[in-house]
Length: 417
Image (cartoon, rainbow, N blue to C red; front, side, top):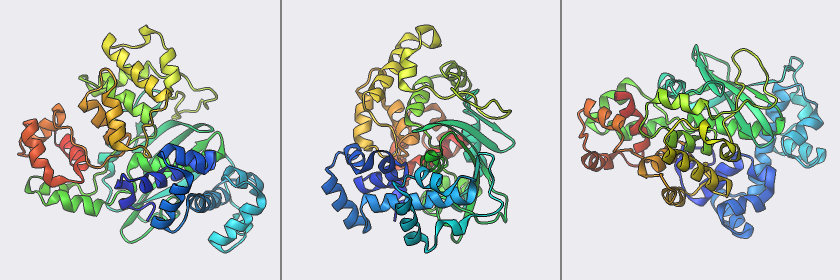
């Protein structure tokens, strides 16, 4: 079902459609935009989703709008008419009818007297336990860019450029025993929550903001299935037992991750952070509050407008960055709805993009669960530390037993290094 680990790992057109609907594509551009992104006619797409899910894209988007509206009713002080349009409904009547259909009550019955009005939307994002928070947040924290994101006292904060404006989000693991107030996933046996505080310049961006936070933290993964597959290899059994629930840190923006991958070629993580910070402009309208980001990662257009001296790197790498920016500007998609094989082929056709860079982008921007960077120095060091072959060809042969979860093995190899 949509939102399940199976949908998160699948690469077929139905799963890609579900991800794009979750990111609000139907709300912003309708079914024609969704069909165009997937390369299908509207009629064929409707038939595919109806046969697979029992509902077409409009019905799936309508249910999602109701969920977004429910969150805005209970978490903000917006008026109900504002909420209706912020959630993507075309009219108040459609809002009321859909809400009654999905929840069996009128929207006004959910309004609380103590609803916050300070512009912060607090949420709890559910996940399937276990989740190794130290590994997940530590990975993101080690790669922060000054002004764009930060990690402090167990809290990860970052800016996001969303379809209707800028947003900032702070994420941290919920304390044990926290009350169940999920959004974007239903709680169940063995579930937990990530606390989130969203500050949105436009409430219409709530749905894509939640979807991208869930993708960033890999909250729709099935850790039991992943860990069982990897623990079947004696070389990984001990580290899986010691650190259950290691996730795949992904991204909130595919272009950002592509730039990070290119900049990170053959330099240290610390060096890459310094170079990346010089590329990030101050954000228009950013709120100057302690601990909140004041910069946004550049868009392809902004990066292309930068002078040569802004790129603290060899000329060949600068050309590669500009080639990637031109490709994304001209229509190359680097997100969860992209066809993984076609996107990798398109990336490899760009000057300066080799297999390591393309695969790193697949790993973190596209969320491919089955990528292993066998030539990566950190991968080889981690493999050697765990008693695995560190020769790329030998490691690749050994790693066949980890399919279809080699990306999760990759994170564990980096940790072992």
